[in-house]
Image (cartoon, one colour):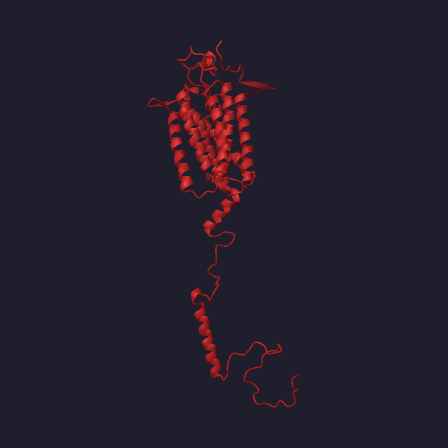
Length: 360
């Protein structure tokens, strides 16, 4: 008998009166792991880990809504035939493109509301998103969906006849594309973490690489998949999205590294980013230099280079005034014994006979 991966016999379990779908459970586990990983990465960068919970509170529901909207648009044949079918995320699933787009929009909004660096936060979350996606693909296995064409490879996935798409009823084992993606997602997540620590990638370069890498893999995956999808000019709609994502992500990464002002998403990056923004605004810790009210040399409105000339002119004027008043020169600050100076020209020729002469 040929080797193959068996399909699960059940797609969920009962917890009292509630039926828990493995697909939904995997999403909960994936989201939880993403939050914990992002908190750890964001805290190591010097950010407030509480921000991650606030962002997740808004981004996760937005991502689910965006993912379902994208799924309904691109795979209408999979929408359940009842009134709540378009909302049934447990039956058919979510489209990752829509989920990332709407979730990212909500996340950026919340990060900026907290006056944090959105680029650094995106780099913190990029590997975590890949881990969440990898766990979510386990849910596709329990749903017996998102597989590729027929194969005789030892790791081919057995699909029951009721789950096989039209035209493939005679085939038994199919490419486990969700398994390929699971492996790739974890590998790319590890690569992003390594690059962030060893290559000084400027933010949001890691997120740009996430977009580039995942989109490029989806080109390969979409070429294998046989599940129903909308087509345009003979290609699956997701193929065009994957190509566009690969190009856009690559250009984005190139631009951020060549012209971007972001700092690498390493330990203490939040403080470095704030300092860089402060220096760019002229509001750094050192004040950015002397202000208009500060006059380090000379008088107000006087160029520093004219200070010596001004001092010399002032001394000449004082000498002229002294000569006019009969003063021989500038008086000393103190007398020989440290006493206050006598007033020049005062009491000249007076009678000093009663005064005690100084000791020898």
